[in-house]
Image (tube, rainbow, N blue to C red):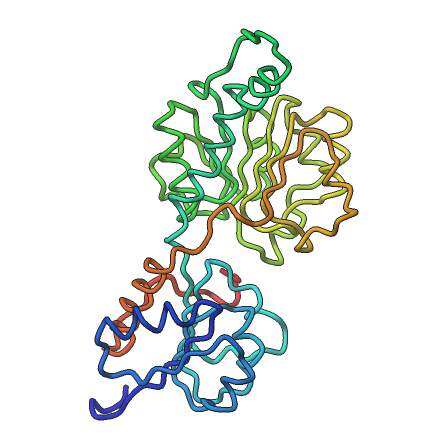
Length: 318
């Protein structure tokens, strides 16, 4: 910890640096000297002795090895994969913004679940054909939703699912802290977890252990009535196995926000795969005031030698 007379050098590195800089300045953190940029290489020319970084991992990772004095990085994203790449230094504290996306993710997921059950798209199509469509609609009540990942986002989804009186299954590495989950599954129980679901929602982080976790074996175990929604990371899905399941009708449909490679190339077959909704990584956009508030709260803790919220374990990769 520095003397009270010394200033901590804060580097804000984000496309939204002007907004973040204004909010942090208004917070009156007198122990900070603030430098804000959207270009990492311009930043490193002017500030190479910073103690603290607040910003986007995709930008921070480009200069992290050139910052010998860095003590703490606060990611403005929930995901921090760019900072976990081999060869990057790890001798600093890393925290993420994992608890600011739950409400928006819940809106996204249940917006699509309701559209599926209430046949909203089909009704709209019938309207434009002048067809009176009084076919029976479904309901979320009593349906079984499987949450692959029950962290801050999964917990919020579980609470919303309980509101609709759904049965909630949760698949986690080992934690069982979310009370809104009716039944938990772990590790090798993944096939038992998926074999009776109406909806499978994935919000897992992208790690070595989760890569390709939803594979052909999992798709074979899913009931053909199941819809898959992925708001976690694209590399969790075996995209070839997914397309095969959708084309053969062994999966009812998929709502995909994230992909192995982004943006999805224009000639990728997923664009034309049956019963697939593609939403181009827009499920939960950053709400800047909430993210800045988390940084300000953590910054006060950091200065006072208190524990930080949402620290990332470099070994576990989340």
